[in-house]
Length: 285
Ligand SMILES: NC(=O)c1ccc[n+]([C@@H]2O[C@H](COP(=O)([O-])OP(=O)(O)OC[C@H]3O[C@@H](n4cnc5c(N)ncnc54)[C@H](OP(=O)(O)O)[C@@H]3O)[C@@H](O)[C@H]2O)c1
Image 1 (cartoon, protein in one colour):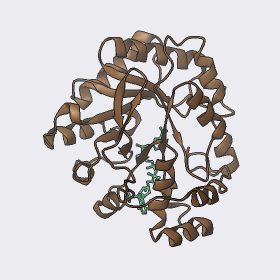
Image 2 (tube, protein in one colour; image 1 turned 30 degrees about the vertical axis):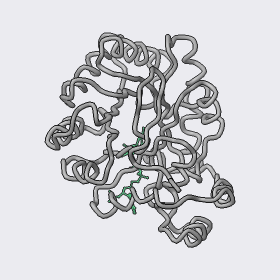
Image 3 (cartoon, helix red, strand yellow; image 1 turned 90 degrees about the vertical axis):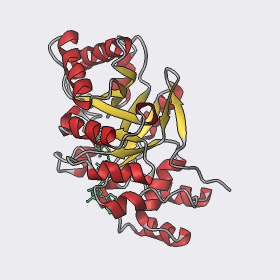
């Protein structure tokens, strides 16, 4: 029986194929963990202008001597410039820093800059796609009204919405909107930065399947059909986090985990109050 593989891919808008299992590089500023992730089988890498590590990610991939077409690189626009052209300058800078000829998927990092800021960023990304700087474009941390608002200015809707998704934060209305509109969900922080590793129900399921808590969290995410984006800079954890393809969660176990939805998120970590954090993007105009 096959439980999937780290090499599995999915087609996203624009007939672009992306690996479903993605290595998160937030906070990583050296090449070794990226090489360890490649050794473990990861072929997709998530970076961002904001992480300040695009140059390191690009260098790590080049040093590994893997064919450009065999890796998938995701990065994110941090802030809009005053104009579409000024925003495009930042996009070109990212492509230069990565030095991999093009980006596979370029996202708006978050909806923080208001309707006009989001429109400028999206128009710049549409232009970047036309110019071959990005193969696919998408958004991150967008909730319903940000997504609906795109219908007013977008020539094409996003290929991907990257958001925090775990059994503790399921964001069902956003997932449903994206499913209806052909937007692939990409989950980040799928092990909730280890902050829920002592949850009793999670540990009960972990005991049932005889796997550690992190693999159960990652497997739940995988079975939901998301692109799964986990980060570690420790070689043993990088490997361990890929060991989710030798078991599956039964529908009863998935239901038990689904019941843990409670609005708990780990991002944005600058917002200290947990309730405020779960509403943060919903309250953002
Ligand atoms: N779009 C956005 O706004 C956004 C926001 C956040 C994250 N992201 C992306 O998603 C990626 C992953 O998210 P994340 O880093 O916030 O959260 P995460 O992947 O859920 O957790 C990463 C944290 O948990 C630890 N960890 C990882 N595997 C572990 C394991 N098996 N056992 C114990 N601890 C473990 C890591 O520590 P060690 O490194 O020490 O192992 C790290 O501190 C990021 O790197 C980034 O690419 C995007």
